[in-house]
Image (cartoon, rainbow, N blue to C red):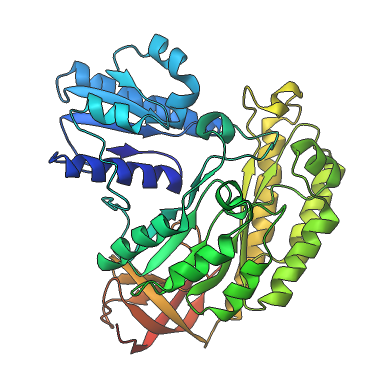
Amino acid sequence: MVTLGCSKNVYDSEVLMGQLKANYKEVVHEAEGNIVVVNTCGFIANAKEESVNTILEYVKQKEEGIVDKVFVTGCLSERYKPDLEAEIPDVDAYFGTTALPQLLKALGADYKHELIGERLTTTPKNYAYLKIAEGCDRPCSFCAIPLMRGKHRSTPIEDLVVEAEKLAADGVKELILIAQDLTYYGLDLYKERRLAELLKALAKVEGIEWIRLHYAFPTGFPMDVLEVMKNEPKICNYIDIPLQHIADPILKSMRRGTTRAKTTRLLEDFRRSVPDMTIRTTLIVGYPGETEADFEVLREWVKAMRFERLGCFTYSHEENTHAYQLEDDVPEDVKQERANEIMEIQSQISWELNQEKLGKTFRCLIDRKEGNYFVGRTEYDSPDVDNEVLIDAREHYLKIGGFSDVQITEATDFDLYGKPSEIVAE
């Protein structure tokens, strides 16, 4: 099993692997096998290119007799199946994002409906992704996800609790809630937003100690979630809320359903309700029609908001999206310059915020040992994208997958260094 793209794809691969294992198939992730399934990403140009190159690599291995069969699934396959079949015909079969039963059949396995929450997790044993919904109903002009994932479909609360209980029984301590849009959770099933209720239910699962929120949409955010975050210790004071831009003309063209004033007010509400909250966002620069004035509005706003975590991407012109009708008129070098400038600003902000942590003690979850360091995270940091806390393994021993109170002794712009003050009981 080869997985490309985002955490939603990681989750899908884990489900597929769990199904294969239940069918007594030997299955490995990112390791050698005689049958290869490539779970592709089709979101933006770079991701598509990586997916195509990976498919071609395994087709070449098939031609050389190194592997017997190559199957392709995921977003790229959903979006471009006819093109891929014509361009790379040596793949044994292509499957879309909703064709798990058909893919299993091609692999000589049966789809087992009773396997709620049965997955072969590929993340470190102490955390796992929990996908609470599939698809998206938002009309964002630049985004092809609805083409690849379909309409929003929430998973019932009771099913997610069962899945969380099984993960906890396997030693998972942190759940990272993911979806194309957490904010919309429950509207389709219950006719109202139920994210807060879901959080309360998951917080009751024994063994789960941290619950983290990823990919919340700003428009229509259910404010009762903040109350749960404030009062329930298991909910990390952390939210990932991709805002994409802040200049009103760009927000309008992006069809984000909000304004600079509304977005700023929402973030102020976040910080007022949960003063200790870490806010992570992502931004897009170089969107069609983005002027120097629009970019300056964005740049100054980033300086003013002082986000704890921020990522910046250049606009990718995606066919069959609403924005594809617009002229992709910002040159690539200008897009890159703008992205670099935003990240330079953020790097300085991150450095300043990290200096404030010196001498303070944080509860950290220890993910792994790498070289001479144990690598952990605070509740304010998500895996792979945020700060890490590094503890010298030559001087201290920590249990991987466990919690430790760590005093911060040194801080850079994106990493913290510390020493354990005590080991927290499991």
